[in-house]
Image (cartoon, chains in turn red, yellow):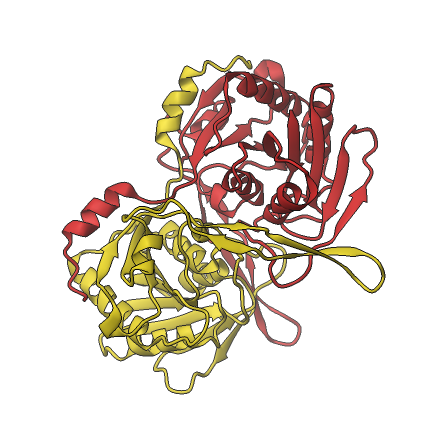
Length: 256
Length: 256
């Protein structure tokens, strides 16, 4: 398989290096890493239109993968990789392994997930992978899992129009309770802004906030990860709310 | 109605100023503008976590609306407006009027649409508005249309969970062929990268590309706007592909 790997934590992050290594272990895989040259968390699906992009080769310690750093966003990296660097389309885009979960509404803000979305937009199957932890990160099992998942998916047929969003609980292989196909759950943030005053008397705000996970049934990604199951959520390209088309049509808007 | 107005072209853009004026003409409306201090096109749903945000009051010529400029993204502006500036939630968030259409997959890249998404995430009904033109921009009718649409929607009941993405063709009121509730169509970009060499012999890339609109049936936003109809597309918050959950479960992934 030809695999394009990217992330949003930046090309020097542990998560992407371990992922690239695990994928390159399989001699049938051809792995190309194209990733941001610095952290790009919470960039959403931003792309870079107003300044030129640069591509620089970097060397990882021991990965058998060509690695290119881009001064842009995760979505830029996937566009560049597929449309300018690779001679033919890769078989799959894998984005991650992210430091921290991407559950529920996180997928809208996540550069990791947006990079995978970009793959789907360009007609390439795509997987986003996150480790649901911020400290004591151990990417070893997560990297192996994704490597196996991709092999298995390739055998059973990869869907070009469905993004798979994978979240892996932060525990050892033995403690995991299995794999669950899930829907996106509820995850929101409260008390988001911390208002402060600088030494010149001017106000400024830090975005912050605590996570609230409420109303998540057993079928959600949030519940699965909390119960130490690996969560795989299919996410679709077309964001139209088809039910609402009918409802809106019935409202008989009086505006023209 | 309490209305929070934002955009991604920046607070000094014509589109937002005309929108704010049209909304403030109705004495029952209370309009607050919180918008980026500079252009933020194609920022997607990026938010600003790694530097503080500043808020500065700016004065428009003749709009009866308080206007605050933020050194952040459209999504930042909506978060700040709702969670830090306004004492209670607004009745609606309106994002626009964007210079240029936001059709099909554009909604993933668009700061305009992402700002509206942020409203929905925070439990506030939201509308994104774009004028499908880049030159000879005339926002007058578009601003009036949105002002009427919002009044009509408020009477008939605003949905807190469905974003309305409105695209207005670039023609006069008399040339318009009506309003259509649509689904997102196909709109992609080809030949995206222009590779050049700088005076020091280093390569760089400009993202560019031509738009391709293929396979759009009569029900799509792309077709509606091409036929001079105003397009209103409902977009949903939950991106789960529910059909794919079933399919994936049947694949019996052999990975654990």
